[in-house]
Length: 252
Image (tube, rainbow, N blue to C red):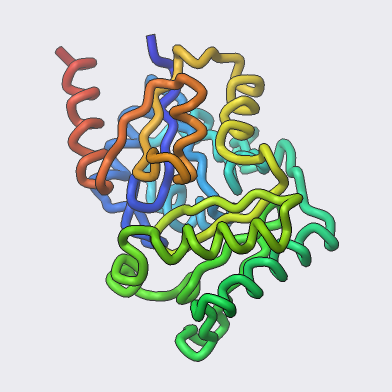
């Protein structure tokens, strides 16, 4: 029996970097009455709030939401009416600089570093404390622009491969629509899911995971390799349809 519904965020619960829809918010709130809801993503903590938590209706059971930030290298739980950080496997300054340097060098060499396209205040390399996220056209770019930039992941796979040559002591993984995550080897979503199981005292068999990047090289693939039951979705609408079916079965 499943106890936990775990989700990637962008393209699984919502459009990239956009708040979840009112429909998705209601579905998650309904499911939170019975299940633990555990998003796990390369996003920063504040994006979990902006994209998910701040859009939930009052009926949501926030104590059943557990946020596994930056691929689960940071964990936040709702206790005593507020969100509290449980752990954070932060990079050292030297590690962060090495990852950012490798990504910038690789992207420039391949012609995929253009700060002129960035929105004001945006950046290509973002330090998320426990990992670095390269976003080719910036975090604030529009959804359509992001989806059009590298739909087959060819550009990002090339950048990630070259970056790993410049900084072989780190791991580089394709995520989202324009993103590459750089991190300490092994601190991918498998790392996050292992901590999820430890913190919430559940087994792999009690988790159902939803993600859009489940192919080899995608940041959801480590979850598949663990043997956790995984549903691959194209977008949040497909996720919503499956969640409706789960609710309908519960009510039958």
